[in-house]
Structures are given as structure tokens and as C-alpha cells.
Amino acid sequence: MLIEKIGMITLMISLILYLSYRYIKRYAPENIVIITLLITSLTFYISFAIKNTFIPIYAQILILLFGIIIPFIASMLQQKNIILSRKIIYYRMKYLFSIKDYKQTIKYINKLVLLEGRNNEYMYILGLCYKAIGDFINARDCFSLAIEFNEKDYKSYYEYGLILDSTNKKEAALLMFDKAIKCKPDFYEAKEAKGICLTSQGRFLEAIFTYREAVKMHPESYEMYYNIGMLEQEVQNYDKAEEAFEKVEQIKPEFSLASYNVGELAFGRGDYIKAIEHYKRSTSSISYGPKSYYKISLCYCLLKEYEKAMGILEYAIEFDESFIKKASMECIFLPMRDMINEYVKQKEDLKQKQLDKKNYMKNKIVKFFKKDNNYLEKFKIAK
Image (cartoon, rainbow, N blue to C red; front, side, top):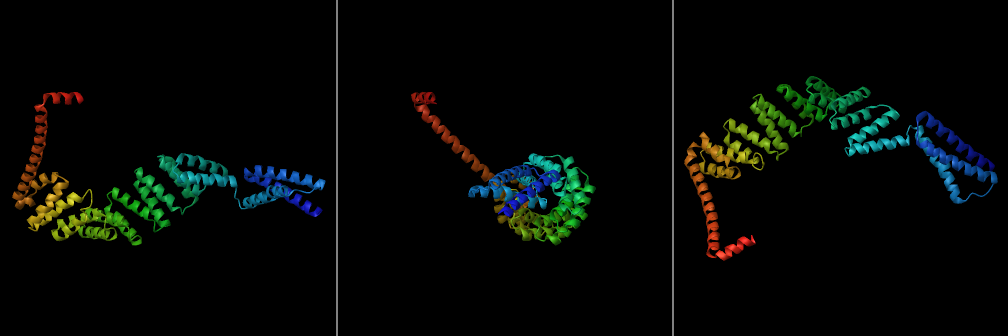
């Protein structure tokens, strides 16, 4: 019995000494509370032991919990360099970052830096926060520091490159994107950013090469294929442009702009059947739907199917009446000039009839009130 009491007291004193040492050497604020509870538990235990009195069951549980279990768990955590107060700050910081409270996140990261020093993770998150609030100078410096801590940090290279690109430091930005890709060869965003950066400098062939390298690893990226199509069109490689746009259609059929572009390329080389096929796929687009109907009408006209051409043109005009003027100036529609003029005349007659009907109803109401002046006066008063 005596040995048990001495063992308990020795263990509790050892835990006090260890936690005090950890508090002084590693600054673990939670140890102040734990040590206080431990000393209180030790005091009660010693008083019971000296008097050799029975310790109630609830007191035994409290002494065991606050005198042994909690201090022991804390000491084990600290042995692995897990300081609870720092972990609380860390997870609080991560939560604030997740809800996009960037200013508060910066404050918590600064607290962690004071406690633990800088590291790659803190500098990367800090850079994202500064970038989000528009402080690009501090963001750039943070990403630079993050890279110093970890030379394989492809995300920091990428973010650093975006900031350099946005501040018109194109060559330096390209260098950062290349480093990001070197660290992570399948890094989609970096390859896309590099292509955009090259395009902004007018280096279309290099941009095409970058995008084509990217689609080898990302064969389902319709955005990359679309960019290839636009750039191939820019350098007048129309066959390759059409091939790229058709690839977009295969991957994402609802991407109507690609279909419209295939239609344009087919129309340009005189393949009106193919042009119609692809224009039809883009008629559901809010932006390109009316244009697609107009272009289909042009194709049917060139194929000398004038009835179809007129029917589709009427549909386009229903969406946008400006196509009436455009069609009247289009040389391709010359064989249909009488049909267009007749349609315009019918449309104007319909408008006039609607206006006459409106005026007729208005006149009927006025005549009705004129029959009864008293009623008209009452109506005005009531009004």
C-alpha cells in the first residue's frame, strides 16, 4: 500500500517536472492549466495518504484523470512535438482560409510563424491570402519564400508565375510555369497558363506546341483543344484548326462555339453541307443561335435551295430583326431579293394592322365616353 502511494506521488511529480520543462523549452501554454490541475490533484492525494483515510470513488476518478491521465496524454503529445494550443490555432487558421476570411487567416498565420517559424505551408497559404486581397507584392514574396523552403513546391511556382504574368513580367512568368511543370509534369493549370502567356505575347506556334504537349496527358481537355483551334486558325492552318474544333465537339458536344467555328471553316472553303450540319449544332446557343440560323440560310441560298433558305432566314429574323437589313445588303441573297422584299412587306403590313387594331380599340373607348358626358365627368373624378 505504501509502495503504491509512493509510486503515485513519484509519477505525478515526474509529470509536473516534465511538463514544466516542456513549457519553458517549447512554450506549450496549455501546460500551465494542466500543471495547476496536476498539483491540485497531488495535494489532495498527499493529504489523503498522510491521514491514511479512504478516498471516495469520485475523488479517485478526479485524481486519476487530472493527476495522471490528462498530464500523461499531454506529455506523450509533446514528446511528438504536438502542442495543443498551436494545433488549435492551426486548425482555426485552416477553417478561416476555407471560408475565405483572408485577413483573419493572415493574422493566425503570423501567430503560428511567431510560435514555430516560417515553413512552406504557411508561406503558400499566406501568399494565396495576399493575392486574394489584391496585395501582389506581399503575395509574390510569400510564394518566393515558400519555394525556398521546398524547391519541389509546384503550386507556389504556378502562383508566382500568375502574379508575374499579371504584372507584365512575361519571361519570368514563363520560367515559373516551366519549373512548375518540371516538378509536376501533368500539372494542367500550369500548362494552360503557359499557353495563355505565350499567346498574349503573340508567340502562337510556341503556344500551340505547349497546348499539344498538354493534351497528350489531358486528352479529355476540350478547353485545350479549343485553344489549339483558335491559334491554328490565327496562323492560317485551317485544316488543323477544324480538326481541333471537331475534337472539342467529340469531348463536349454541348460546347456550341466549337460547332459554330467548324461551320465557319467549312463555309469558308465552300463545303456548305458540312457547314449546315455544324451550324445546326450551335443553334441552341443564346449568343450564336441567331447567327447560326442566318449562316444556315446563306448556305441553303448558295446551294440554290431558296425556299429552305427563306424559311431559315425568317426564323433568324424572329430572333433578331437586324438580319433584315443585313440580308438586304448581302450579295449572296441576290437571287432571293424578291422573296425577302415580300417578307419585309408582309411583316410591315402585319405591324400596321396591329397598330390599326390598337388605334381602333382606342377610338371605340373614346366614342363610348363621349356618348355620356356625365359619365365621362364621373370617370375623370373617379380617376
